[in-house]
Length: 235
Image 1 (cartoon, helix red, strand yellow):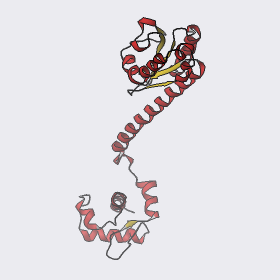
Image 2: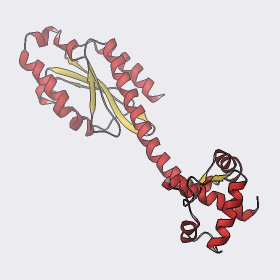
Image 3: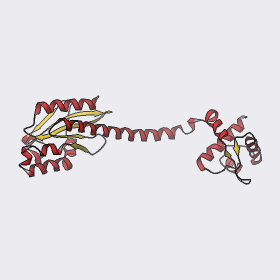
Image 4: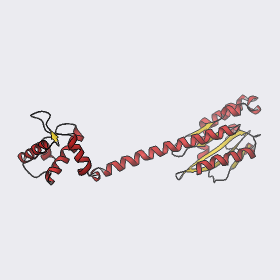
């Protein structure tokens, strides 16, 4: 197969991949890839058909690639750089979505782990999203403070669902655990509660993970639990 035939086979396969329609000499000339007559192209296409690289589904139709033509194209004639830019753009977009989804799954799993370790609410502000994951609300509702004060219980639920993201977005944290206790609390609805928070990073994006519970919580235990789970996210 000479250079022109190779170029012709590639052009036919590329067009057929794009359109799924038989390719004729007229369409090839209109594409501007060949400086020869339509008769010359038809003659070359007949030669490629005789060699088994193309076939003609109907007498009046153009040619389509055969399996043999595709094999030669893929193994010897393929030029990945022709579509490399488009492929890389699509990959970068999908890769970004992929890692963001994985980041969110990782944070949610960390919150779940923390919630299983403590008798309080575990929560985390997720990078890339205006979202706070929280688990363990049923934990705190079992505490005497909440069982005796339904208004406090509803205030905790409201704070988590409606206000927590805005509050956490204003915090400037380090990797150390910070404590918000009682009337210094950031959320007026739950000033009889305490909140422990610390920072984590996922692929350079900062997030916050913490614990919310009654002021009577076990601070020493919760601090260690929070540090251990935050350490997983930082690793």
